[in-house]
Length: 538
Image (cartoon, rainbow, N blue to C red; front, side):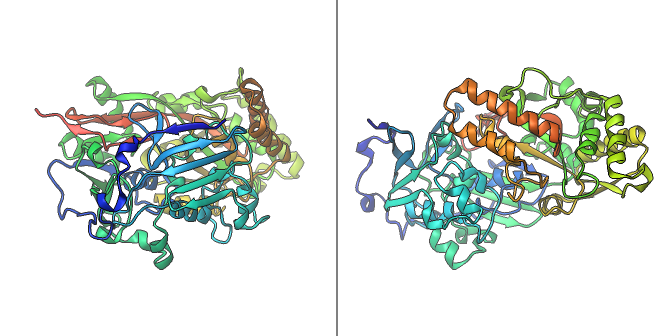
């Protein structure tokens, strides 16, 4: 018996050509910002507006406005069909067959199953490696292909016809439909991507997308303007006519613009609220907050001396006073982390280690030096890399002071704008690097698989462990929730013993918004969706 989900009444499925002339009815793009447009900001230029490339936070926020996949997160937080009209799941839970709705690219062409297959294979294919291949590992042979062990034609992605896509999985994956709502699974227009691989640098009608908005303007390092896409399949549900996105690196400038009414949103998940403004906003009942599924790490490059030594890594982690960091630097809005999994995903019942265990940290530090046959004076210069944000600077300064006091060693600080910082950490040109990681699933696997393969693009630590890999593989086969949780617990114990990354704190969504702005969807997965938002009349 097949499990079936049907979401588009048959009566709506009228003759495609009669409904829409896909050549003539191109998206009409407005020429100037409207006074009713939403005004928001991000702290850095996007890495890319190609959803297969832009996996950094600023890119994800914007690509969600411009593209859409088979599923989406509705305003009630539930996973719902987007471009999927219906789907069938086989009895063994391994084969998903999706029927696509008749939807269109902004240039009037149909979005087809070929576009999906092309886009997904592009990410998995190791010939042109991109971040995010790990998201496709539930699909048959995707992991082997991304590691160069099998050919791309063996992947479990098949186009049955222009509007039917079939996906075969390696193992039952209860969260698979949820993964399909993430940007990695968004399609790009195959014909354009082949003709012009740099299409994502364009704007206006040359930028072909299929989401609720189109890209009217993109001035690098300055601003983007997106406007409602009339070719979007559910355009009638989009109530915000357009969004102006300023690229504003300075948080105090963002605050000033917000107070002047020139920004409608301040803070997470788009940017950070200035630390010095937290208490003021809270006192004036402007601050809204809730716990998210994110964690802020200090990655340790396990291929860079002295972090090749496990005891050194442990010492640097155990010696941090996270409680003081959260209270004095982060204004008490975050939660100290002694694991990588946020509390709502946690699989442990007791902490893996004690916070601010300075005695144990000193002991491990000196044991490590003995193993390495060196003294503290022989240690190479150690540098913390962080992005150019005041809050990241203050975190680095606190840890610099704590480690200097504890170990008597000199720590250097180095900051760069976000794109350069991310590239530096990704390529392994660092010792200690700060990176926030937000789960895109309400399942432990998303964060845990970050450390699965050292040659995976998202494993900045360059650490790998066979027992850890074996346990993660076992979680993929285990259907008993309790046993699966126990496997994750065992895997996390290995991770926290090896300490390839230091968890500092679990993140909190903290923001302020215009009193007139209503209908915004924001979630613990750091999703924010403005399509249903509107301004209440005064």
